[in-house]
Structures are given as C-alpha cells and as structure tokens.
Amino acid sequence: MEFTNAYLKDLFERVSKRNAGEKEFLQAVEEVLLSLQPVADKRQDLVDAGVFERFVEPERFVIFRVPWINDKGQLVVNRGFRVQFNSAIGPYKGGIRFHPSVNQSVIKFLGFEQCLKNSLTTLPMGGGKGGSDFDPKGKSDREIMAFCQSFMTELFRHIGADTDVPAGDIGVGGREIGFMFGQYKRLANEYTGVLTGKGLSYGGSLARTQATGYGLCYFTQEMLKTMANTSFAGKTVVISGSGNVAIYACEKAQSFGAKVVAMSDSNGYIYDKDGIDLAIVKQIKEVERGRIKEYADRKKGAIYTEDKDGSKGIWSIKCDIALPCATQNEINLESAKLLVKNGVMAVAEGSNMSSTNEAGQFFVESKIMYGPAKAANAGGVATSGLEMSQNSIRLSWAFEEVDQKLKGIMEGIFHKIHDTAVEYGQPTNLVMGANIAGFKKIADAMKAQGCC
Ligand code: NDP
Ligand code: 2IT
Image 1: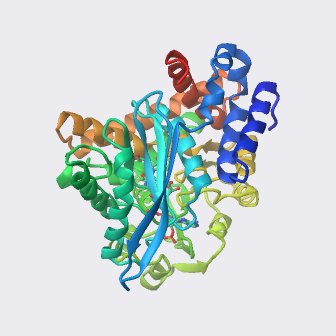
Image 2 (image 1 turned 120 degrees about the vertical axis):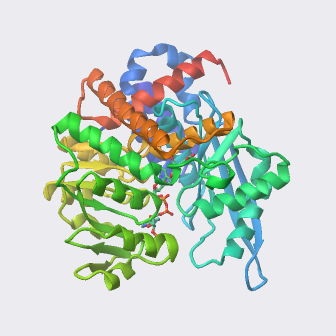
C-alpha cells in the first residue's frame, strides 16, 4: 500500500525525520496513516484543525532513572518511561512493560496504538504506555519489589486516577502491580484506583486476569460467525506465547470446542497433537515461573522445539486459526505466507502489533479473516475500564457480570470495525476498519477541544 494523499505523505515524511531511528513507532504510524487516507481525502476540516499533526505527536513523554539494589548489594540503574499520548477522550490509560527490549520507540508505538484501541472500547480512556528495560526473569521477589518501588517513586508524580492509570503488560502482572500500588499509596497518601489489574482484596476487578485472552476469543468467535458462518468448534489453533494473554486465550478457545496444539516462549515452542493440557501450562508458568520446555517432560507425546528466533518456527505448524500472543513483529512476511499456504482461515492478534506491516498487508490481500491487535486484544484495557468504573462507585461486580460486559464490548468492536470496513468499500479489510473507527472518535473530540 502507498500514500496517495499528498498531505499524509508529507506528514509521514516529517514524522520519520522527527523520530528518526524509532522503527517500531514509525511502523505503527505508517500503517495507521495509510489507512486514514480516505478520511483525510473527505475531511478537510480535520486537516485544517491540525488533528492528524497533533495525533502523531505524544502530549508528554517522561524518561527517568530507576536505581535499585540487587540481592548482591550492588546498585543497578535501569531506565523508566511513560508516554502520555492522547487525552482527548479520557485520562491516559495503558500498561507498563518490563522487558530488556523496551526503549523509546517501543513505548511510543505501544502508546500510539493504545489511543486507537481505547477509543474502540467505547469507554472514556485516552492512550498511554510505560515501562522499563528491567528484566524480571530470574529476579527474587525482593529484587522485583525494590525495582517496582523505585520505578513508582518517580512515576507517582505523573499519574493519578483522573490523570493517567497504568496497568500490566509483558513482565508486569499481579505481583508487580501490587508492589507499585503499595508504593503509590505511600507516596501520595491516598487510596485511589490509580492502577488497574489490582488484586481482588484491594480494588481489583474479577475477570481482569482472564480479560485479554477471553476477549480475543470473543472477538474471533464473532468474526468467524459473521464473516464465514463458522466457529471455534472443531478447529485447530496455534497460540504463541505462554503468558497472561496466551493462557486465557487457550482456556476460552478450548471451552469453545477448539483444539489448541501449540504454545511457546522466547526459547522455543511445544507441539501437542492431542491438544494442550492447560493445567500443566498454568502450573509451569503461573506457579513455578518456569519455561515452556518443561511441558514436554510432563506430557506424553508432546514435542519441544528450541527456537531462539523469537518463536518464528511455531508458525510452520498447520492450523485453522492462529492467535499470536507473545510480542510485536512475531509474524513476518515469510511466516504469514507459510500460515496462508497451510490453509489458515483466521489470524487474530493478542500481542500488540503482532505482524510486520508486510505480513499484515499480505493477510489483508489474501482475504483471510484478520483481526488486528488494536481491536482483537482490546478486552484487557476494556476490563481495566470496568475496574475503574467499579473503583469510582466503590462496588465490585460479580465475575459473570464483568465477563458479560466484556463479551458485549468485544462483539461490539468487531461489528464497529467490520461496518466501517464495509462503509469504506473494503469489507474484509479490518485493519482499515479498526484504524478509521478508532480515529474518528478521537479526531472529533480533538477538533471540538481546539488547539491543545
Ligand atoms: P507476559 O509477560 O505474561 O507473557 C509474555 C509471553 O510472550 C511469554 O511467553 C514470553 O516468553 C513471550 N515473549 C515476550 N517477549 C518475547 C520475545 N521478544 N520473543 C518471543 N517471545 C516473547 O505478557 P502478556 O501475556 O501480558 O503480553 C503478551 C502480549 O499481549 C504483549 O504484546 C502485550 O503487549 C499484549 N497485551 C497484553 C495485555 C494484558 O492485559 N496483559 C492486553 C493487551 C495486549 P518469555 O517468558 O520467554 O519472555
Ligand atoms: O496493551 C494493552 O492494552 C494492555 N497491556 C492493557 C492496558 C490496560 O490499561 O489494561
């Protein structure tokens, strides 16, 4: 796909110069601006109000030093980030990622995507994202706590329940949210819903743990029903990753009658022709914080294949439905071609920006059902929005109530982006549908609020 709109072409050139070297951020911006061309063609009012210009520039970006003491008594310095990307439709909202690959570009691409995703949920949330190049792997609980407390000691002055509400992402789960919440409370001397993904005893929402994976499957089920009059039942599914999103995607896909045959981590993947026994995966990953390799030692007939190349090999396994749930750019063009050649009918993204732009474009051109991340994985942040609602009214809803709301939101997102794709004359292009539908609400709010 190429730029045909001269204004957006020029804007992307300027964004590329201003953010030189930030390849993930530029990848995300390029994909979105290419999709928004029909909007720019029609809506000169948005061009005149500088909405596109402002939309690609974060409102604020904080970078800070995070010093902490390890178990050997040594001082270690990491780098912390928080991007507050856009607050046109609500307080900044988005997760925190702890992974050695985190840098300015990664945080900005995640924050940019988050704005559109949060808009699609229909809830009042702007977009933000944060993180650090801290690697939680192999650290003791005390080291994790020391790091989280130091990270929050700077971050607390930039966030707040009506300002910016962080949550989890890669490397940040219930344990880390607990340590960060405790430190925020201590520094700010207030007990507010400043973070989501909290424990149930201190303001968390039921179903938040399951929300991204369950939501991904609710979205996919609706896509299969509407676009191909089929469902998960009897389908073979491959899921990359074995973290929070992957585990609950597997649980829901299995409950819908699918057979999940593969999962992975950054060292390799397991193939289990009889179908994954999720209890074993949960024990290894959630309880022991171990490696997926151990599954093959515990389950007869399962095979482990080492794959240091970001688990690309998993996409060579034949499947009907692929659910990438590990990290960005985990599906390149070569993997996309292999999936399509092997007969995949649907790809729905649990991880953010799972596919390279070339791979995503290939899925669109192949006319398979392709649910882009900002729509398909919005269930996590949507349920974070429901956690914020519960905190505001100081009540907790039952699991079923939250789960039903989540299901309704995900089905609504599918129909919104599908209807938008139809309206713009490309009924199978859900990438375009998601980008345009997410953007329109933010753009109208930005225009109404004037030059800010
Ligand atoms: P977790 O930390 O729980 O799990 C991450 C999984 O992905 C692990 O299996 C990990 O393997 C694997 N992984 C991470 N980085 C890489 C890499 N560079 N190469 C290969 N594998 C990798 O994170 P989540 O499950 O929460 O997040 C997974 C994805 O879903 C991310 O893209 C995240 O942004 C996205 N997401 C998460 C939401 C949430 O609510 N948690 C909401 C929406 C999207 P290993 O253990 O070896 O590192
Ligand atoms: O990418 C995401 O949407 C998340 N990591 C969840 C963000 C949130 O605020 O719940």
